[in-house]
Length: 531
Image (tube, rainbow, N blue to C red; front, side):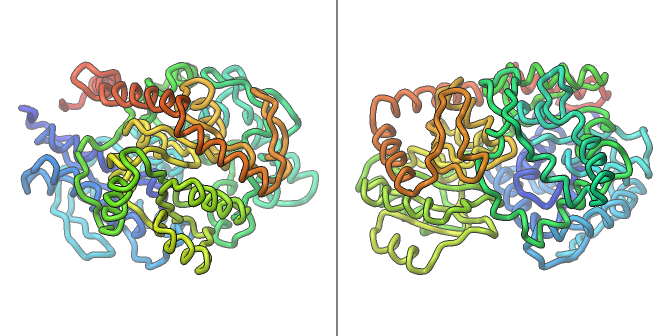
């Protein structure tokens, strides 16, 4: 179905060089141009995301048999060249080249991809800009060119409960309302730069109880359950500088949220309705609308394993030998990896011992899988390990029964949309709160406690008093108990609850679905001619 109006809408999108920040918009882009013949979407991404974005959009179009004319209206390009796989080093060139690319689009001129050389035809100028909520410098470039004539919406990919805690006011449970002021005061006192002391101030805990609508009460130290294995990596420095290099009292992320015109949140009401209420109330206090349009997930049926025939073969073999819902997917996203290598090895040993087939993805640059361990896994026939796996294909395959995850927003949305229950191994950011919410409120997950590390990780949890012992032996005992629980009535209960959420997620973008209604509210507010 397409719109009958000829008035054109042109969306421009840009994000940090992190796939989790861009993937959902790729799906929305395909959805918009298929429903509306008058819509163009241009994505300005770092080279590291180019192929992934093209593949994601192409898969969406393939499933709907979209016409060539429709496909051409999603234009994906990189504004600079780079072969670097390090997402942190790509920040500066992305920021520097975004402005000229946006100016070209505004002038309705043809634009080319710096990586592929592909030239995209001239189209009407942008009238909506959607930016990753971390992309503050792209926002400044946009404002410098079009001022307030083109609305800018922040694209928030994360659990809203964490957004409230990290950036919200104290009246809504925010814990860091005065963080920038504290960093600046400490910098003045010590003579150090905000970059040098920012993490220390941010991660300081003293046993305060954090209360966020929709979450169990938690001690402040529960937000940092793991030792950071990347905090001293040189490649992280550009990101930290990007975050802390300020000429204003707020962090750039908070400034971006304050200075945008409105917000798109990709979470789901079915997942965290109460936290969403607090999130919307916070933005209403700034006289801004927050449109909750999630989950923004593909509705296509994934019948093949793109780029990974070994994944397909492994799942089919596991299903034949162990039955449906027998396989565990293990993935901690593209950044995180356990700092205690022996903990992940203990988990693998337990899975082999219990004959629990698994697929392990180790995409993080800090991931370590020794040749010896890889050979042992291969010899058992119970495990498959890879730097990259087709996650959605795995989650929707009948052989898959569980997902061990860090609990990041995209992973949570994808697994619950597939009706797959969770084993949580949180690291930081929105993950610890998500783990508590999924175990205590939604009852769709087990949380691993003994895998916690470091000073904060070994302290007790407020909700149950448990605290990690800090030993591999304790990890071994816990994971074996969890494996047994997965195969028990408790595991069946969690699966039933996850399946119920799957149905609710699918309803969100139906004709009268809550997320569809919120997107329509955005369309009406800004006078766009869209379905």
